[in-house]
Image (tube, rainbow, N blue to C red; front, side, top):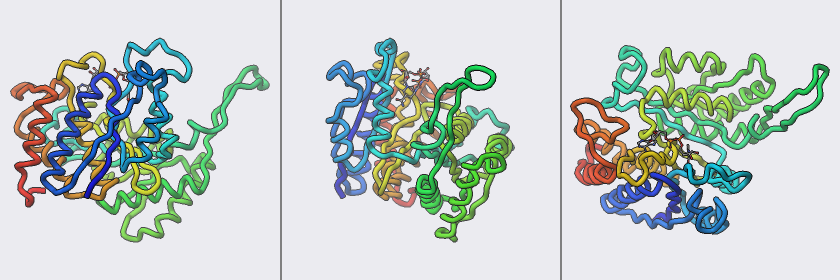
Amino acid sequence: MKYVIATLPGDGIGPEVIEQACAVLDKVGQRYGHSFEFKEYLAGGVAIDQVGEPLPDETVAGCLASDSVLLGAVGGPKWDNLTGDIRPEQALLGLRSKLGLYANLRPAVLHKALRDACPLRPDIIGHGIDIMVVRELTGGIYFGASGRRLGPHGEEAYDTESYSVMEVERIARTAFEIALKRNRLVTNVDKANVLESSRLWRSVVIKVAEDYPEVELNHLYVDNASMQLIRDPRQFDVIVTTNMFGDILSDEASMITGSIGMLPSASLGKGQFGMYEPIHGSAPDIAGQDKANPIATILSAAMMLRYSFDLEQEAQAIEDAVTRVLDAGCRTGDIMSPGMKLIGCSEMGRLLQEAVELLQPSEN
Ligand code: NAD
């Protein structure tokens, strides 16, 4: 199969990590008989410098004409003093809305080799943690009516949480579809004991669940969910939740796994189109020094293979390669620990390509 991937390297370490992710994808293509064509577009600070705006129309058109999008990171001190719409981060918000990306997938996986980076006790981690947080991305309180007004006690401010049946239905469906590819358990997180929007949310999730009898569904209030993530994270497979609750819980879940340089993400829209990116920023402090950890971006590419192209075996090959290289003791600076071998971004990419090539089909 041939796939066209729009790449948006962006700023700081973005170009370095994207280069390694493309090289690994090329290796997967050679190994499994696919061809990936990469088309690079401007986004973020580099776009402001070159064409005066963070998200040029050409970039949006290029993304829409591709099978999926791979983004590095945007922003940096050079553009910190800009105001209004001419800011690198506007590229991210613009991409989400213009590409119709309403489902944010944030996996939290603890690699055995990085156990020491986990702040939880070994008996709580057990044999490992593998959670997928599915966060609604384009609705809820972040997009509802908000403002200031004069109340009986002076000035007040308000934000509104509101969800339509359609918005809940589509994110619930995304969560159940993902659960089918994993351990078939969905935990719905809401605040249905207090919020009317949560009561509607929960009733719609229950209705959608009827179409997925193979998947188990349970419910937690968000306050309990935040405790359970620390008390017993192994009880979770897929968590589906609103924009604001997902914002908070996905960061909590990712802290359990240690380094920011290891965490991928996906934002999905209609059909199988998606934008894939590491959760970290442009890390200006290490940019251009070959110190960045490319694994978060490379695992984002693996998510692309799984969720946009349905290439499960190929996605697994990348994830197995990461495990193999970590097990061999190779580390970039952010995940370095005593006794391990310190390597740079390009060497980590090279080792991962090599591991993809060397893994026996039976191993993945
Ligand atoms: P950051 O994630 O860029 O960096 C935080 C710390 O983690 C830094 O010490 C950095 O060196 C380290 N780090 C991050 N990614 C790493 C990697 N792959 N390998 C090794 N170390 C890594 O967050 P920040 O410093 O708060 O933000 C820097 C810039 O990035 C800002 O302009 C911010 O607005 C932007 N940002 C962009 C995105 C995005 O594009 N999605 C996300 C967050 C921040």
